[in-house]
Length: 255
Image (tube, rainbow, N blue to C red):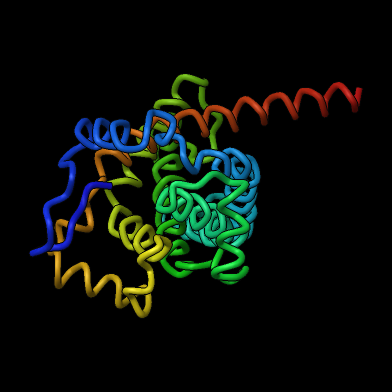
């Protein structure tokens, strides 16, 4: 993301285009993919925990008479799913990814270095901020999708045509970026190699607000939206497709 401390030296780039150009010139084109391996490794279990936990909490929170889940409880189910996801998968993944990018190291060299210098506990740096971010992310995304289905069909759990599921996922991604960018900025700071500058997640919030102003909490939001919005469309669509395949295979096995 593109940010600097107030009063400090100017950043070497000021936007997405100049940031890409600077990174390629300084470190080469493939440095843009530094930290990709942990993202790929953790993607499947992350999505599994997220959607499985959300459905579990929706089932627990559903009205016993109608089976429906209110708007507030839809957010709560997603929030709880996000916290589960953050604790089990996202925190170590994001810590590894962020620090590998900071150190410009690959997975093979970076993991031993992190374990040697920080220990296993170092992989859980920024757990509180990650829970806030992922809880807010998934709460807002699942809330948006429930309301999207409700708007289109009158049922929050209704099955949609694939193209409408994809569009809903795009909207959910955009909604989550708008509502959780501050948590993402803090999480990134807490998981970077400069995390020692902050005593806690709350201290990180305070320092950013005092030294850089409230707009600093939205630094990098455009770049994040460019990644998150299409990503969420693909994820919600993929889960829908995989679910249909599993149901079809189960039906064939039962027959």
